[in-house]
Length: 242
Image 1 (cartoon, rainbow, N blue to C red):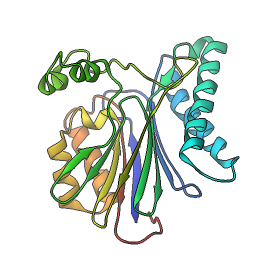
Image 2 (cartoon, one colour):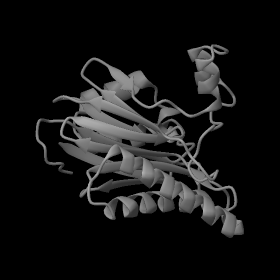
Image 3 (cartoon, helix red, strand yellow):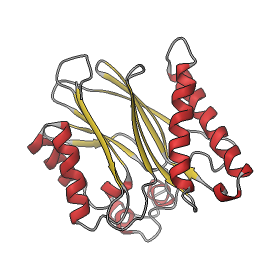
Image 4 (cartoon, rainbow, N blue to C red):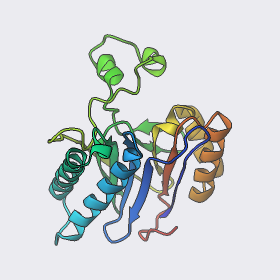
């Protein structure tokens, strides 16, 4: 498997509150999009990833239950930090982590950073956004087209570190040779639709160049938010190589 990950602050933002990370020992990719004033969003995303990885490092055997325990641990850490430091008050972060075990990918997810499975002919959004408009769509109150253009489409109903408890969503997805796992922040998906994303991935095929191209396209379209992307290509090899 080949992978590449990168994060760019975009054109409109003064700092980057996104964080991307790969933990080689646990074969886990993480993307987090922080929020909060006084650079607290940047603190929250980095703090969440560091706490999550520290927790996993302390265990002997990896499992889905341990991912849940790790999420709970880092939620508590970020939440407590927001209570103790006035500059961090109200901070939080989205959080999407993917564990790769050969052809099986397990994902734990909070917020609206996304994980996609992209094949030669299709694109499937694995994760479901934890947003107000997605909830309205699921209840049948607005259409899918209205979700895309709704003025409140970034109001989160779940974020890590904003409350004392968190209930993430867990997904499990099989990948085969030639498939791609692509994880993005909303700085990408707000500007690049699913068809464009699929076409860029399948026309370029090399993870490093895919990531660089997506950052370029998002910035060409205004770069109004931070831009973060993780791309993993399943090429039949078990070892992950950058």
